[in-house]
Length: 195
View 1 (cartoon, rainbow, N blue to C red):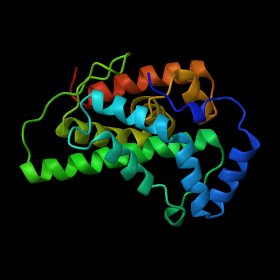
View 2 (view 1 turned 30 degrees about the horizontal axis):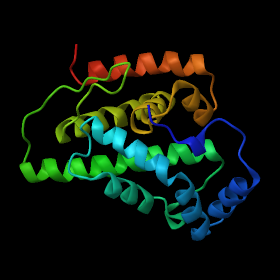
View 3 (view 1 turned 180 degrees about the vertical axis):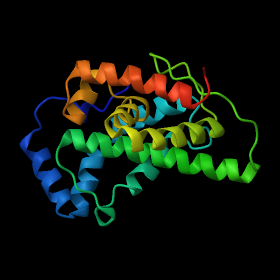
View 4 (view 1 turned 45 degrees about the horizontal axis):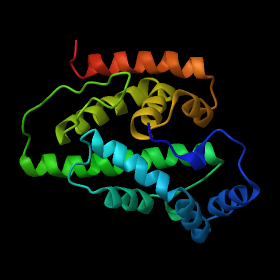
């Protein structure tokens, strides 16, 4: 599974900490440099997401660049650390995919509704536009009920993070992530009508 190497649970190097602090203070060039450091990993993540069938009309480069545009300090980018940057990138990718899917669904005026399957491997589901919209609606509902579990889905599914990386990003233990991941998947399956 593709992950952001820069975002691993290893201690950040001082230059990266300096960049994070500068980005938090609104320095656009620091955001640009952080993005450049993570660019190859972001492209790998975008390829993984596209391989699942999500964002089928966005090419990999467009998905990465659209996510980058969402990482602007004037939009409230308040970086705390590398793990927080990972969460922000995962959320930006999710927003780009969902916005594009909603536009295409609106253009088609509906189309057929299909079930979305979230399995342990995360790689076997092929998501169409309507699937992404349904998933996002259910994820927003889950966010209202249990924000941590929604964040776990976001990190794992849209961010491509492992259990351990998700634990670091959210500041919880790996067993907590595993337990909440199982519960969140079951809740989403019911919400999406999979039984």
